[in-house]
Image (tube, chains in turn brown, red):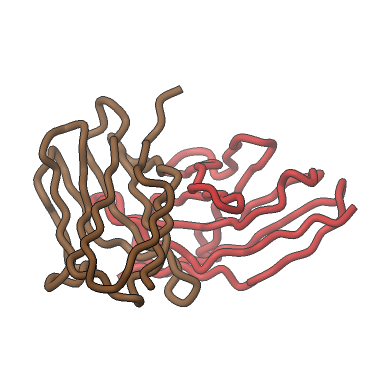
Length: 111
Length: 113
């Protein structure tokens, strides 16, 4: 049963620190998405990639967030420097065709 | 831009009773429609999807949804709810020629014994 994996599952850090979240998409999927979920905003799309190329990162604060796909098996989302308002659950999803499959998420708390 | 509305923030249902969750979308053409479920502390799991064809679609865990173009709706139903169905449910929509998913705000379902 192929699944999207994300690490770490939980992260507590202090304001100003760098945070890197990792995602392993399902093998064979050619699209990868990063979402952020908060109580206030719900699920927001931050970025998405197709065939490792970034297609849209308009949902991402450019000054502190960056997303990359160094290879087909790894996607990263980095926050530098982190701020308390970045506290949220970050989901990665991958897909091939019409459907997206979500990972378990990384719960981030920035103190 | 497409939008998704889930009118009910919270629904409480008795175990064994039927459940219907509402979803309305705003989009000019027929979109691709999805229902996801999120259990506490978990990621989103796909329940079912509609792209075209038969407007009544069957999903996992005994769920079904019906696409009604005239009402711009895609309501989720289950005839008999189990305690394990307590979760948050999200309706989502995307254009057929785009990868972006737009999510509703979610409906939290509580199941009472």
